[in-house]
Structure formats: structure tokens, C-alpha cells
Image (cartoon, rainbow, N blue to C red; front, side, top):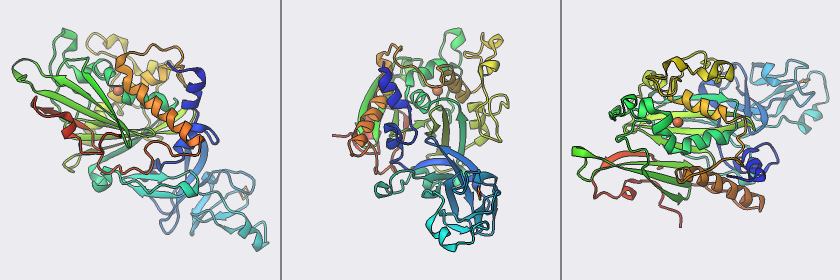
Length: 425
Ligand code: FES
Ligand SMILES: [Fe+2]
């Protein structure tokens, strides 16, 4: 449980907030590359950390990320004309270069004026099928991180987003919480749950598949330089046993990223606050062997095929209490949740907690220790940044961070499977 004050500290991310200052110290995905793929294409409204921005690609292919409100009188530049080397406000025709420089002001002939004013702009990069931005102080800008999937051809990955009207922390906690996987996602984790037996789901692409029916694995947490990782260790039983264990290691990378493994695929998930009560979840799925992922199958598993719950066009999650988040209670004899798809199950849980969950009323148990650790690290970062220091995990090499889902003989130490940074001192 958290005090009301700490809950506010954890969840509020707008300009001038302590947690907002933490997030502003990191490079963060702000939209999909495909959303601004064309030179002179449609400008895109981008909400991030409580700020309203517009992203566009100019005639030369340069990316711009500007404050959405025109510096003249605040009209949205997302309605503007994107042509001939800049974005032009529809209202009085001021024209902006990708870096925010004002190129033309048709209603003001004073050329000196254009030198004195500019549109607020942010550093922006494209990599791994995503557009990344840095919204923090210039003198604190960290090196642009090299995520492992930057080395995989974009065409071989699945890169997507889903925006939901819920605080980022509920999404992050859902991702850090392993004990819900064998319950909420029973259809995937424990096919045959309805008969009381356990049939292992052997699909190597499925991140919710468990190798045993063990719902209370040994959970070990270790702080690392990027945040922490936790290992869930499950003993195999019966003839498969002979001491073999399944090891799942999930890295939680500050401030709000995690990597979920299946035996073959890594699912890197970034929770990016749009504002206090909206979150963009960016997902990158890639195979460890670099071969193309099966996008159709992964979409099917996630439940993104249902137009009542997800808009391919806006990337918005559409479930509400009006539609009971897609829950069909007539199917619950053979379907655990009555909700189709792993992501849609997660979304329903997060949405049902309210826009910002009240953590002063909860009753935590040892299985929640990863959730607790994530909160504690974020709150610690907020205190450090407020005191003029650096947040946990900033400027850390992320290129070797991997999640692990591996079944190994009893004499293999799980720590030896970990290729990324050692435990923090
Ligand atoms: S409001 Fe944009 S040019 Fe006037
Ligand atoms: Fe989940």
C-alpha cells in the first residue's frame, strides 16, 4: 500500500512534477515510425508527459517534433500544411522548420521578429520502427540508447502501440506482476484449466505459456544498474522432472520498460505516459534468432483483431464498462476471463482499477514484490532528481538486456543465463 501523497508522486507526470522530471531524463518512444513515414505527410498529434506536441516529416525527410500550439496565437499546427520544407500554420501562415525555426511570417514583415521567436522543439530520432524524443534539460541529455532490437531488421519485427485511458503505473504494474499470468491468462498459460488438469502450452512464441501448473514459483529479485530483474523459478514435475527447472527472467528497465520472454520471442514493452490518465503502450516483438516474427499469430494472441476493443486506425483501446471491456460471460465455462486476447485481458484489469488506482486501500502479498520494487525505485528516482541527482537507470547500456524463458538442468545456475549487467552493488 502507498500513502495518498506517494501515490500522487508516483502517478503525476506533467511538467513540473517530480515524476515528470524523472521521465524527462530519458529518451522515450513517442509514436510509431509508420505514423510519420512520409515526407510532407500528415502531421501527427503527439501527447507525451502531459505536453501536446506535433510530429511531422519535412520535404527532405527530416523529422520535427514541435509544441502543437502555434507560437503566434495557439492554433494547432497539426491542422497545418506540411510542404516545401516546413510546417505552415493554417491560420496566418507562419511556417516552421523541423527544428522550430520560423521560416515565414506572412502577417509580420519585420524579419528581425522571426529571429527572436521560435517554436518550441524537442530532439527526435528514428530507430527500431519507433520515433524517440527527449523532453528533458539539454545539459542532462543522455546518450541515445541502443536497444537490442535496433540490430534486427524492422520488417522482421512487430512494432505496435495501444493507447488506453489509464495511468501509466497500472500498465507498468501489470507487466511487472508475474502472479497474474497463470490466473488471468489461464486460457494461454494453462490450457485445460477447466478440467483441473495441466496441459503445457508448448507454443514457443507465447509469453503467457507456463511449463508447469505451478502458480507460486520461487521469485527472486535483484537490483541492476538499469532497474531490477526478477527470476521466477519453477520446478518441473514427473518424468520430465529430473531436477530440471524453468527459469523466467524479466528485466524491469527504469523508468517504465520491461522485456517479457517466450522461449523464442522477446517482447519489449514501453509504457509512455501521454498525460496523467492516458498511456501509450509501445510493443516491439522480435525473435532472438532475428528471423521474422509471425505477426498474425501475435496479433491473434493479443486480441487486437476485435474492432470493438481496438482501433487499427487510431491505435486506441476502445473497451469501456459500456461494453464490459469485451467480456462475454456466456463463454466463461470454457474461457477463464470471457475476454479474448492477452492484451485485452490486461487492459480490462487496468481499466477496472480506475483512471488512477487508489493504492492506499490495497493489501499486498509477497507475490507483489516486483510491483513494490518498481514503485520503490521510481519514488527513489523522484527523490534523487528533486535533490539534483540522477534517476536510477539513466545513461545505462541497454543493448545487452534480455529476458529469459528457458528450461535447464538442475545444476545450471539461473544467474549464469543472464547476459546483461550484473546485480547492482
Ligand atoms: S495562430 Fe498560427 S499563424 Fe497565427
Ligand atoms: Fe498480463
